[in-house]
Image 1 (cartoon, rainbow, N blue to C red):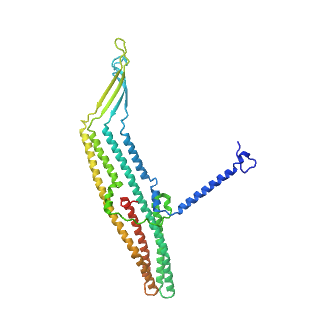
Image 2 (cartoon, rainbow, N blue to C red):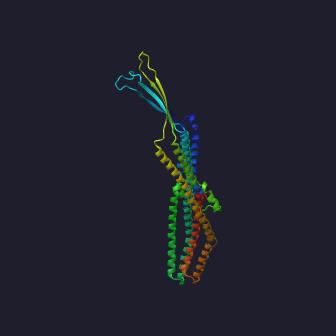
Image 3 (spheres, rainbow, N blue to C red):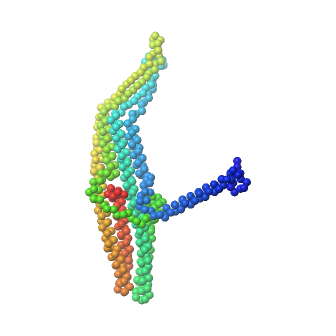
Length: 440
C-alpha cells in the first residue's frame, strides 16, 4: 500500500494532486481553532449581565429537571393504572390418590391448567388516574416554583457581586482624595502652619483606605464564589455596571388577589386534589371486586368399559366480601378525610404567609425608593458640600483636621450607602417577582 507524500516528487501522480487540498484543509482547521479561541477570550471580557446570569442558572438546573421528570413519570403512571392487571397462570394436579396408583388410577385425578383474571373496580382505577394526574400537576408546579427560587437566588448573588464591584470602584476613586489630604497636611506642616500630628493622621487614614479596599476586594471574591454555585466559572467574569430598571409596582390589592395563581399555592391545591381523590378511593374499598377463573383438566384414566375419561373445564366467578374488614376500612377512610382537611388548612396557611410576605416586601420596596430619592436629591450633595467646606476651612486655618477627615469619610459612606440602597431595592424586586408581585 502506498501513502501520498505531498512534499516528495516521487509520489504517485494520481495522489499528489490532493496536496493543495490537504494544505487548504489544515489551514481552515487552524483558522477555526484560532477563531474559537478568540471567541472564548472575548466571552471572558464581556460583562456578565443579570439577564445572562439568570439564563445560565436556569439552563438544565438540576432541581427543575428533577421535578419535570417526576411530573412526566406521574403522568405515565396515570395512564398505566387504567389497564387491567396481568392474568395469573395456574397449573397443578387435582385429586391425586395418596395411596398410590398414579395419574390414571382414579377417575377424578386430573392435570390442570388455568388462568385467573381479576377485575378491579373501574371507578377505582379512574380515581387512581386522577390522583396521579394531581401528583403530576404538583410536580409541575414545584418545578415552576423551583425556577422562581433559582431566579431570585441568582439575582441576589449577582447583585451582591455588583455591590462589591461598585464599592471597589468608589473606594479606589476616593483614595486619591485621601492622598491629597496627606499632601496638604505635609505642605502646611513644612510651612509651619500645622503640626506633625495632622500629617501622621492623614497618613493613617490613607492606610485605612487601603485596608478598606482590601476588605472590599475580599468580599467581592466571596460574592463571586457564592454566585458560582448557580453559574459556575462564568461567575469570575466582571459584572455589568448597570442595574435593572426600577419598576413601578402594581396595586397591592391586585397582587394579593393573584396569589391563588402562584405555583406554591397551585402545588398545595394539587396535593389537596390528590387527598380528595384518596377519600373517594377509600370509599371504593367498601365495594366488592370481581375475579374470573378458567381452568382445563386433563384426565389420563379410562372408564370401566375401556373408553378414555373425558377432560374437564371449569369456570368460576369470585367476589370479595368487604365485611370483616369494616373496622380497617373505616379507619382508612377516617385517615383520608383527616389528610384532606389538613390540606385545606395548609392552603389557608400558605396564602396567609405569602400575603404577609408580599405586603412587607411591598412596603420595603417603596421605602427604599423614597430613601434612594433622598440620597440622590440631598444626602450626596450635602456630604460633598460639607467636605469641601471643611477643606476650605482647614486651608485657611479656620478648621480642624478631624472635621476634614470626617467630611471625606462621610462622602465615601454616602456614595456606598446609595449603591447599597439601590442593590437592596433590586433584591426586593427579585423577592416581589418570586411572590408574584413583579414578573421577571
